[in-house]
Amino acid sequence: MNKRQFLTRAAAVSATATATRAFGAAHGHATSCPPSPVVLTISGAIERHNRGALDPAFDQLLAKHQVKFFEAYGLDLSSLAGMKAVTISPTIEYDSRQHVFSGPLLTDVLEHVGAPRAGSTQILMHAIDGYAVMTTLDTVRAYRFIVAMQMDGKPLPLGGVGPLWAIYDADNIPALSAKPLKERFELSPWGLYHLQASAV
Ligand SMILES: Nc1nc2c(c(=O)[nH]1)N[C@H]1C(S)=C(S)[C@@H](COP(=O)(O)O)O[C@H]1N2
Ligand SMILES: [Mo]
Image 1 (cartoon, rainbow, N blue to C red):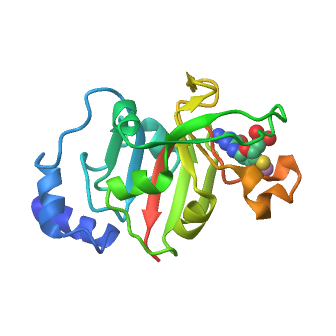
Image 2 (cartoon, rainbow, N blue to C red):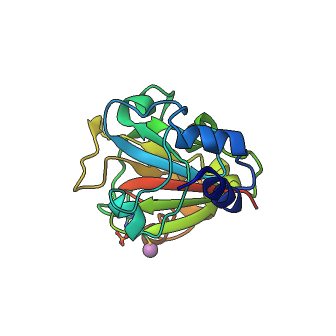
């Protein structure tokens, strides 16, 4: 792709991405990608990037889920584990029991990549099984979403509900605790692997 074409397309996708930064990322000047596998890719209106455009040949799952970006930020488990962990103990609908979940606040993860701070910012979350849900930064803050990495002191397995589960303490959120257990976790994708922030 020539420089002019790249810049035109990048500008069309993200009004906030400056041409200089887009050009830099395309040519490998962005922060290098993490040493262990990326488990969470964040795209959209973010200020930091450590990878270039979605590659339909090798970003198979992202492409299958219709994700599009020219730059993104990929986080591995150790970078998530390096952020301040929060612990919550919600009652889960799968077994109607309380479990202890821990991981960074979703707001801290979004801050880490320079996502917009306006409450109206839309946050799209994709899970590995194709489940996708859209919410706002206002709701992410109000529910105190965490990106859970552990349940009951054990890492969440891929093939189960991991490695990441975006979850909140529904028992202590009045709007949710008033609902039946089966209706509390619509905004809570297990197997979370992609987030997209969009300024409104
Ligand atoms: N990855 C993933 N997360 C998910 C879902 C799903 O299908 N896949 N369903 C959501 C919905 S709509 C609810 S109510 C709860 C429980 O959904 P389930 O009964 O389909 O598992 O998990 C939420 N998180
Ligand atoms: Mo649901």
